[in-house]
Image 1 (cartoon, one colour):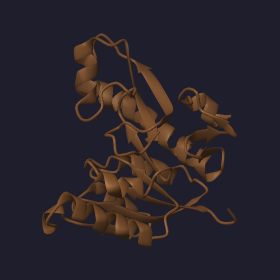
Image 2: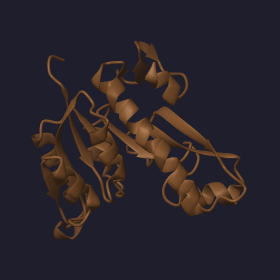
Image 3: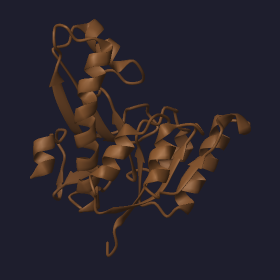
Image 4: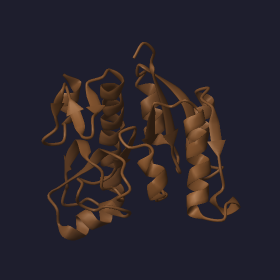
Length: 213
């Protein structure tokens, strides 16, 4: 590619992962940040960085699929090469997702395939796990079920609460997600029906150390 990778992001919350992406000074151009919540902090983060923003209200559309088609239509119109779900909390219509196969990634706060969906920190603590982590995966129609390309791990401490576990993990997320986007932008991580890293099929999730080499 003879130009920087064009990246769009979707977020529903405060936008800390988006802020980490922007702060990482990646070799990309951010073309759009969209949200399903007009008051999402992520939109403020984007505006402060001079990135175009969009908020659509799901209630303004007759069905979830109609909302998804409209939102993803705007993403497509932005010219994005890669879509990053950075704390986007809605399940996306399968047909809409299919059009972005290999071009959309998501960060999820668990060591997938463990604990898909919500309340991952609570599930980790309830299970008595010795470690917790975050995963970046390509997006498919299956909830948090696409191919995992990278993971960061932390130990679970005896005195951890949901809040303390989430806070410590977020630090790792803020390193992991930019590292994956950088790998895609530089061509090290690619999709050819399956994830390839440095030209070889991935047999296990990449670590932050491997991405940093």
